[in-house]
Amino acid sequence: MNAGGPAPTGGRSSGGDEDGTQGIATAIAEVSERASVLVREEIELAKAEMAQKATKLVKGAIVGVVAGVFFMTALLFALAGCAWLLYYYLPIGGDFTYFWGFFAMALILVLLGALAGLIAMRAVKRGSPPVPNMAIEEARKIRESVGPPGAEG
Image (cartoon, rainbow, N blue to C red):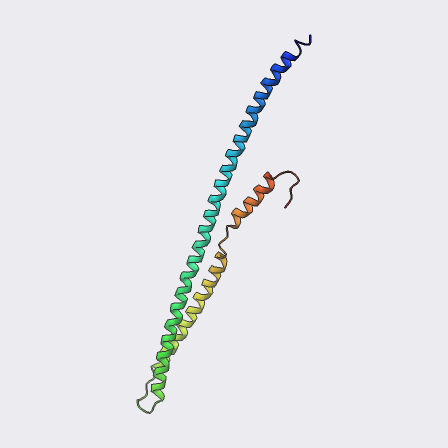
């Protein structure tokens, strides 16, 4: 009776162990595959987010360069206007009033440069620092959901 009892249990036990081992191996392979897919998706999200922020930074830098060009041109006009003004006040010369046109143009360019500078500043603030915040948030959520039970922070 003892001989008959252990044989079926041993048979079920070894068959159950093999099924259990295969089930565990399958589960581990599935978890590993899903984890690698998750990591690839997080990397793609980080790449997309970094590209978007880099684009904003480049646009801000371009507008900043344009603002610099406006200010440099305004400086040239202001200097030319000052030169004409000096010429006007010097005793040599007639009634030249050309300098007011230079000053008006310089003022227009200063206003355009200030506007472009403000736009550039806003674009740079929106785009910097170039950190993939969405990817980091997703990784934090995944870590919380996959982490060991009872592990906080």
